[in-house]
Amino acid sequence: MMQSYTYLLVNFFTIIICLIASFDKRIQFYKYFGDFLLSSTIVAVLYILWDVWFTKMGVWWFDRNYTLGIVIAGLPLEEWLFFWCIPFACVFTYFCLEKFFDLGWANSLNNLIVFTSSVVLVVIAFLHYQKTYTLITALVTLCVLIFLHFIAKKEWIGQASFVFFVLLLGFIPVNGVLTGTCIESPVVNYNPGDFLGIKILTIPIEDVVYGYSQFLLNIYFFKLFQKQNYQYAN
Image (cartoon, rainbow, N blue to C red; front, side, top):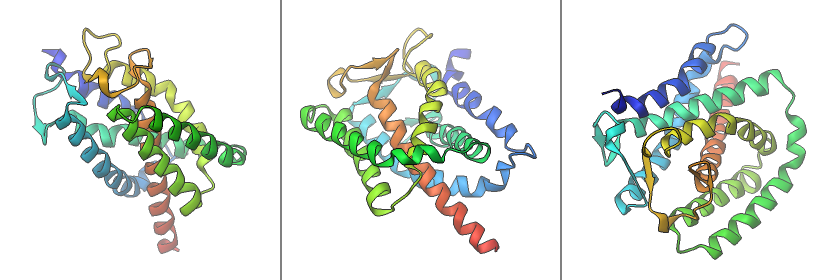
């Protein structure tokens, strides 16, 4: 019986500590809940469409034994919640680290990060164009980096990348459970022909890159709305 709550509990435990800490007087992240909901919803729409498409194509699928059985557009309810719960924990962590620590040093690496990542992503997309998950993830992440660096001209790519590296400490156990670490079978299953097969524990390397692009977009929109509301208030 408890097995069907697995994915729901992953979402719950990912968000609960951050949610409670949001009301700490030193943090007061609750003041930005509106900014977060708006920004995460914009990003969620894009990635849910991607998710629905890949699920329909059989690139990945879900073991319904680990979900409540509520399905919307081919995705379990828990998968929908994932696109708000995980970003909440990520944006909250970024907000706190930026608030209490000077991360500006990492922005000196912007050019290096964007150039190196772009070259690697282009090469991977070219060499593995027949692997759907690998190809689309590489191209989407490449587009996100190009947009942020060359079009939006954001200076925080370095510090956001550093925070994402820190977030991997939480990403690995959370995504590890979803991909089969410490449980009998994976919650999310992948078609072997659509990804590289390189894994961190049970996590496809594409999931890390996918998460990186999603994280960067969430930070971009969160900062955008945060700035707009600050200007409006003043």
